[in-house]
Length: 131
Image (cartoon, rainbow, N blue to C red):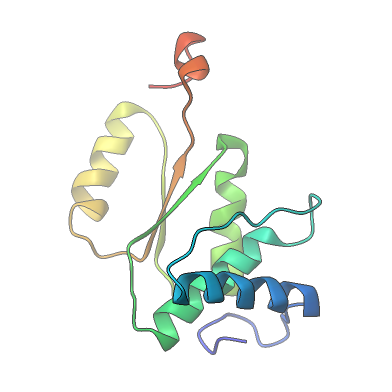
């Protein structure tokens, strides 16, 4: 468990630790991979565990980018606050004016570790759901 992770009562399950170790091994060997399993088994927290490992052990402070569906952005933010409260994770969402303000006041400065953004697809744009 990374020491910068949040509440000490929160513990990763054995399979989640295995997932974090696998992600770190991919990173160490300059490889790509996809972490996939059944919904609700903690992929989000495994990625947070990997990011905290990179910050703490590798002194890689980011920025890292998480690209996720709009419906999960708040969950990502909540999980970062819960598991890694010292990691500065910014959610990039809102109206164009709100995003511009966020960009100018937080993102442009580079004073963050993780940027959480909505995945966009061509289909979403065609249906009017992406900007």
